[in-house]
Length: 137
Length: 481
Image 1 (tube, rainbow over the protein chains, first blue to last red):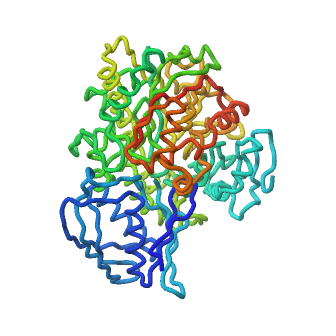
Image 2: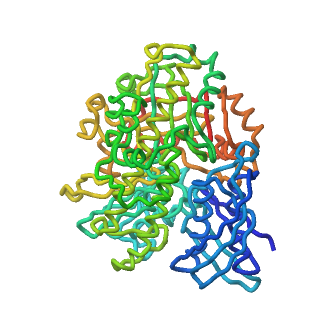
Image 3: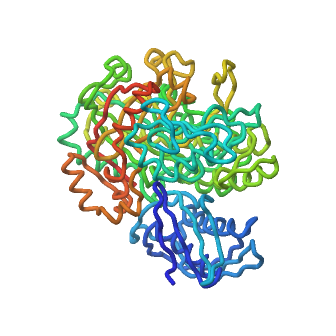
């Protein structure tokens, strides 16, 4: 199973992410979010724990990716390793390991402005989980 | 062409019966050859979705640069009446609140600049922070940042960026009133603290251009534009601050349809009645982000002026760089319009669309009263951009609105598959354009081939009478994120 693929969207970037489990799905969607923006070299290592909650299962994906986007844009931190636990259907706790991005040694691409709700879906399938999400770039 | 019916050669109607829930028909400005592409995109569905917004007046409008966005189509316009339960939708403004374009004119000619264009573009590339992760050299305290949010471009002028008269030549005079920062989150403030005076990435740019065709001598001369004259165009918005404000308020307004008893076909259209507490809070925060963008473009323009002076070693008098005009194209504003013979105060959403007010409109600075509002329509970085002037028909047909650019025809992923950076660089060289870009992939996604020919787009609004062509501007130098 491929972790994610991009689909055609005229102005923005559409992502279809896959996972055997919901945890894997969310981690693969996170990797897609980073891949759109470039390949990053990290200047240090750090670990943090975050809690993310939402009003619905699919909104939780937007909130999760938006949390990572905020930490990337405001704090300059990119995460590479994740351990996710869904504490209820609309809430997750993530243990994440990553570091500050060293821009001088990174290959930057485009800035994702936001994770949108347009055509958003998170679904359980016969093979596992699939999500559709569009990034505003 | 189904499902559209022709009204004129430039205007097509999407009937209100096209989709359940539509309250008004869609009106799409396009030439016939543009229609097949429009119909093949998802944007007509989005025109229909916007027509479902409570309180929408007359039509869900689409400009000829329309393409598939999220929520509203890009190139979408909707005016709602608060007295009829009309809503405000963050999806009708977008994440990059008050993304817009400004143009400065100079006394320089192509003959003076062309031999030194490499030095000039290199200096601009050094002095203008651009690209993913590049911060401005300004790092604002929270106190200063809150002043940016309520003062807009005036904050920048007070801090030495440009001159006070610049503000006369910015829509809203560079500051939206009733901006209230008490609801702004710490996250928005943190994202915005280091980005005033930065260009960003994606389709944002700074271009050194030359006026290469003039269609209206009087209007061009009034704007200080002359054949062979050098101008600067900046396309940029409210950076991470605006993105966070939109994200924060989509969450707040996500509950509003249920609370106020209406249904919408797309969650990205989350809306609240303009007259509700949620609607008013979003408007207050959106105006803060609009002011952030005005300040950002004011600082960027001042940096560009500094780069010209330094690279070309000329005096400010010899350069004589002056702001022609600054227009938002992602914004919602309260404006007076006449519906069925009655003047009403409407909430006009312009999502990838530009205000186009006619001669003698009270909102215009005295200099432009006789010719109408300058309307900046950037094209693509290889071909050209246009300056237009607003006309009365825009007020009568499109809530005083026209297009905002060329509109994409090729997706970003297709551009990356079909083009590469070296091809792009050669193509730009062949066209005589010096380009410097932080992200190679980003630059490829902005190649000429991914956009419609903006000349076809402006011809539609010119023929429809919404705005008239003033002049064409060809790029000589491009700075990209």
